[in-house]
Length: 388
Ligand SMILES: [Zn+2]
Image (cartoon, rainbow, N blue to C red; front, side, top):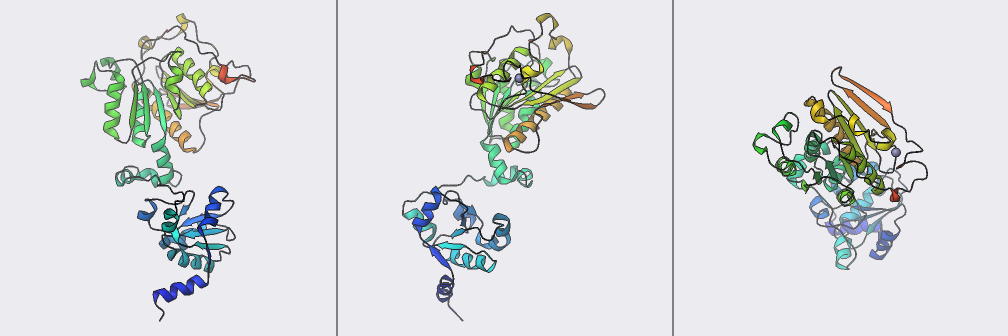
């Protein structure tokens, strides 16, 4: 019966080994080569070679076909010291992989030689539990959840639409949530603005929002803007966010958000509500169709509906806001098909969803043919609906 050392030597005799410098050259030009890390999870999370694919040795045979379907793909395997990777290389050869090498010296020698390495982003055990219903979805997985945790969404308004959208975005683990609202909580808000509660009447809405959202999920960082968007601050506030969820209750803010987002190339999930009806669409960051394709000019002040007078069914913004959150999550994960180019109209009284085609207007002043988006002039329209 051979000893471990004899077995290792015999195995190494049957495989090819490669040196650190050859692997280092792969970092600059990997081509088709797969760099495969076969160490255990606790080793991987402490650091690995950038660009490596990780399959622990114990799962190698069962998972390699999904990770590397083409058996002629060049593979370089590494472990900590070069022994496990030798056995792994032998195993891959047995499975029919034709071009496999083991990195001599392993990760210890790599790191000891001052070659580049990185610590992977991983979820804490608490996060693994919290987001397990997401990570169980193959379309999301740990990778998708980490993407959500690194993402940032700006909610325009912490009111009827901003309440349900920000609550679900926080629950989903969006790492950074921006909330902009200059208003304070009023008793008449509580019929629909579920971020707030009776005890918080009189409190600033963004402060109340932060309390609720952080209480729901401490992973979420809330950036508060106790302000109204104007041409002076809109670029600074919007800049850097991945997605904007527009829950504004007035036309001038919607135009401003649309125009500034187009300048910055940020997608906007737009919704509006009126009495028993809601509308929803996505204005893509790459440009058009946009809000001005839908409504080229604001209505004259005397025709603009006053939200306070019109009233709204309290549940309605809940439905539309949750749909907004869904679109935002899809945009971040690059999942499915968004509402870009489609306007969804929800009639709560008839319980009916209708879908209208929304086309980019070639003459649109902000997303039309030949428009230089960086030169879009921002406009402060006169305010004509202060209610919510
Ligand atoms: Zn447009």
